[in-house]
Length: 211
Image: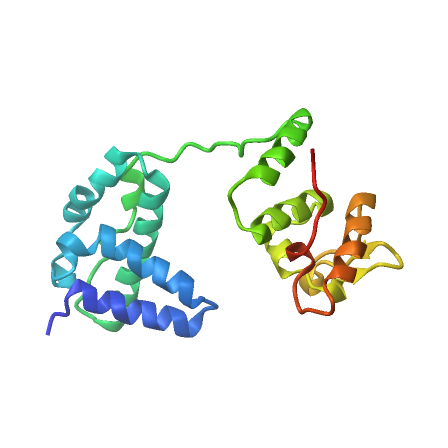
């Protein structure tokens, strides 16, 4: 029996989840991406009947829309699935997605936009007045005060904070302990006092008000 593409995709994703550190959310994102960009025309096609020309024609609309990063991710996953099928079926003679990425435009590398120090005041005022959850606002302010990455800020716990030394240990000890800025240390102390022992991350409770 020549299995349909969708069947191979299901088996590949199941195996990927089993053999790699793939979260459930990430697995859902991968499935949703393939469901949107591959299933419509290839989902019921026997995997051995898929040819490079078919893939090129099917994926060209993504290039025309300018979503080139998405296109490259889809091609990468197509390659993985075809290799997976090839290892399990001797009559899957070749990978039709091999070198497919070279037939499309490359995404242009862009620097991440930066905020000039003179604009920080406006940013803090905008945060203060924004219609967002308090936790979100506090998290952004915590990152600005401590210079930690978003993932580190979210993962921070009170046990990471040494108020006596005004220092903070990074989550999972990926980096050496860093000193807290004066404002962060001062605010962390007042936030810790107001937390009343609740099991909340430092970033989720009272940070300074700006005017």
